[in-house]
Length: 390
Ligand code: FEO
Image (cartoon, rainbow, N blue to C red):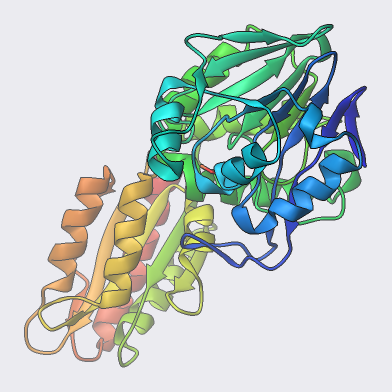
């Protein structure tokens, strides 16, 4: 069994096989972290996905009879954490506690008759020697989200915040490769909560007022040795801090938009500026958005198909628009046969995303000419200049 602090246990589940978490490519799997706080009274904090209920119960039963659990704390309604609530309540006498929004959401998922005390009625819970304090953090990740703080242990159960989709037989940050851990934390931030930077920033401010020496998120590895590492990373990410780096995302029908992408990349690189090139399909949207999180510019290339955007690019731009990357320059290039359309559509989406669109006249007919490829190189050089100056 895994003990975080005396009487505080991890009783979650490891999902080694998940590779797609509602569109997020989870190439290292994930975990659903539930925690047990054993005191005079005992509380279970969150559950696991429905299909992992037995795994969670096996871990709980190795520590305590589930009938002896007094409280079930639901930090968040999303079914990766609430999915086993009804099964658990059927096998225990626990009182369910959630935020008022959590109560509403849980009743929609699991039945209007679900008994649930709200944190408005019970903002904290004295367990005998230690206390659970409930801190609502709306929109980190849903309106119902809260974190639970155990002040006597300086332990924060942070739910979705500070998580990573990372399946491992290890539970703590000092037991895993730090570079992999931070890369997965960055991927998680970029693809799950990047657009929620304002509520996360507010939550970080709240966090400054409490002493925390361990952060136990609801996915992945627990920050035991260096919780400041992930707090500092979030502090940087919410501010939209960027590097002078250019991300080029394109798709191509017959190679023409691809030729332009490579010529632009050559132009950027010729100025000593880092550039990353992603072809949709070869690369997935999860890794592209992660790269974009702290890049300065995104250059989008699409052929015109049926007078509009190439369908793969429509999907990517829709995903990016929802995640609202901050402080970005952008531009659109592409190719068409006899009437364009993709470029105008993509520029409108970039503008709606809040990206500062750089004018670009690289929209070529059929194959780019030598002159057009030279202009693409020059455009890359121009963008390189802009990302290093701004
Ligand atoms: Fe891990 Fe928003 O659920």
